[in-house]
Image (cartoon, rainbow, N blue to C red; front, side, top):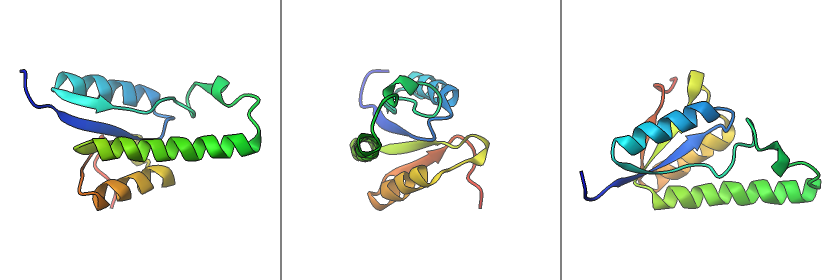
Length: 113
């Protein structure tokens, strides 16, 4: 299975670290190049935020949000980790961004109405 691979960017709340890891493995084994988050701010990686000033925290979160949109730019599609149907405002903005850019959007669970 050598050839052209689809590029998939994972999107979703970082509280779903286990679901991210499972999806990354599955999608990779299905022959996709998978782009994921750089850290799991809601379920680990707490040392990143420790001692950070409020101003630096705000700028860092803005940078990470922007970087994730650049990851969407590089992808053919996004795969939304919406465990339990949860889609937060940040993920919703990433979905809207992907749709506006003409990217396919797939979900871990069928989206709610």
